[in-house]
Length: 430
Ligand code: ATP
Ligand code: MG
Image (cartoon, rainbow, N blue to C red; front, side, top):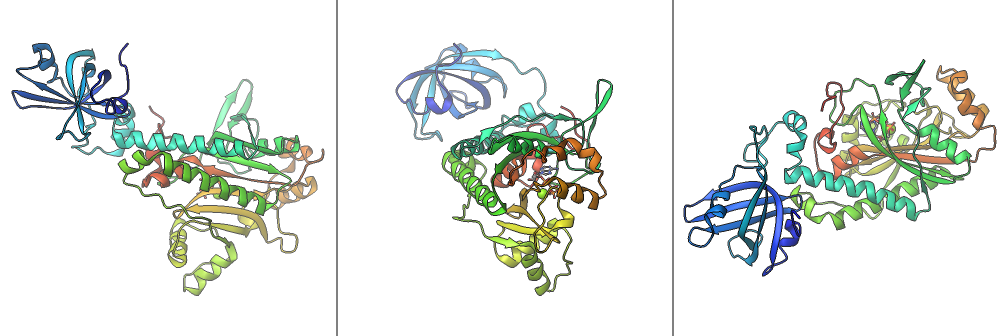
């Protein structure tokens, strides 16, 4: 057995004998007194050895190079100097593996590392408490999403990643060779979750990777991203926005409550509104124009404009409802009386779009018309359109970008920090 408990647990076991394992974080040799900070995923404990008290073997081990993998046995005692309020008096230290190369990242963060280097050596970067905190929060976000969806009576689906045709039109897809045929990596699970609703599953959710071959170079776009999706049968736009608000507030509250330690490491104080304001696209355009900002109805909001909107509103978390039909995907339901707008919505969280959705068109002939209007060929979507001729209920849904949500919750400037091995235009390794 390499360890009897984690370091966090050991810190609560004053007076007890424990065996812990991890990495040498730092050492300090004052001659007669030697300190070794031992780190695992849960925290750090100080090992303290005295020349006249501990064995020569233990004393020698107290000088091991940083990042050596060890296990240490001994008694946890109270300490007025150690940060944790306790320390471990080692009776035995065993080296489990040595460090045999020069490490490109300083885990103690005395020397800051460039993000590119950190991503190249993610396996070392992950040992930094800050990086670990990001992934613990990301995990909790994803898990809380699942929890909430289950509580709402939705079932989890696993749609395909390799698809035979584009799911949303447009050309920004990664092509893959699929035996004798051409296939694509999926850009969104959209059509598949709709097919499930037509199949009568009523309320479904999924957490899936999506692939977009867009040549972005921004702090908020990746070419492989994770989406958390929900689709609801017999629902309109309001029902879906209500559900999105409920899910997002639940997920944020869970993280605030259960990731206190991680949020502290990241120096984040999560503000969770009791409800999220809802504005129409047209209202926001009027606001912009009344502030003298040049913006034409019908354009998409750029990041710079989104910042202006937050400034004008005085807050940066809000829904944008009823978008111009022309800038939303073909499956967004146009308004009956004013088809220039459609029942699509976005959620901006802390100034960034983290979610999009729409009430979907559930009428086959209307879908054909919508595709034609956009210059897409209905024949390419035949399978999909036909499904709507078999008894398709009205439905609506949305998708939350997990990477962006993690980024904003953790207060990061670059989405790449929130992703284990991010894929962007230049980065496909490791
Ligand atoms: P944007 O307008 O910011 O480029 P989008 O409207 O094209 O995003 P959607 O198709 O609405 O994106 O995707 C749903 C959600 O998935 C977005 O709200 C966002 O949170 C996330 N997302 C979309 N594209 C990316 C990407 N390239 N990288 C990371 N996350 C993304
Ligand atoms: Mg969007």
